[in-house]
Image (cartoon, rainbow, N blue to C red; front, side, top):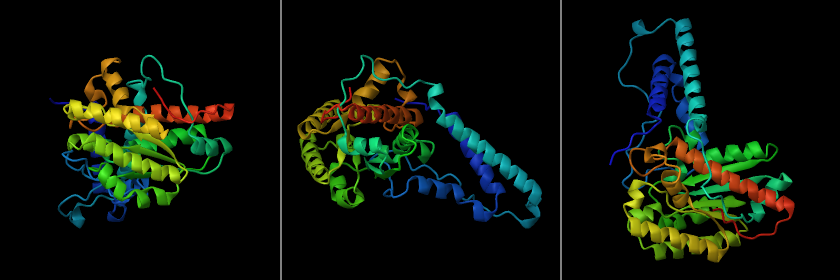
Length: 338
């Protein structure tokens, strides 16, 4: 099965523009875009793709091969003008990618959602205008594998949405995604990557690589429950996120179904939030009739810009509603969207 990303033209245009920047700008400015990407992923662990994922994306702004002689260099004033035009083109491409819902709207699942519960720690601080720390914990779909820019991964999208909703709040979003990992590897770094950050909210995306690696869902559930207990002991709210609905995942249909069920069950037992990503994405395809390549890239596993954006939007809407419930005095202790 092959898939064609609906954003390939945008990606190509960005690549051409950035290549022009590298050829035209002085050597000292060439690494600037790569530095911006590192800043966007501040405090994140070094990402790598999920197991059997696509080859690593070439960094934007990477040096070109070969040398250009002094006689071939353009006039400095002309060079500055062309470089400025290239920068403007890159900005236009980024704006176009950011305005993603004008192409395909992001709709909630048909049939509405179940009543939401509360996230008492993060909702209380957002309502009071106090500083908030959120840790996005997971694998390559947390780092944003498949996006055209780190700016478009789900933690960055979510942070911007919450900042728009609460403009006076000091919101810190820490991306702690490492590609290829699942519960066994994540538990080894839970203390340093998550708990030491003293988060108000931990968004834990887990289970996809366990399905791909045919790990026992019951063992994954045991490790996740242990991790939840440690996070709760640190007075942090938690939202679990289950695997994505994509061809590579539902090739392992029985394992994927068991994983979704056990994670939902763990969230219910431990009284924490659960965002049913698998079901939400399945409804995009089956109920909203969106082709798979509307939200999944050609590797059949990772989401594209639109997929991450809509996922972040729906998750953000739920968190915002949770804050609203707290302001209204609704005393519900679970977070159960859908």
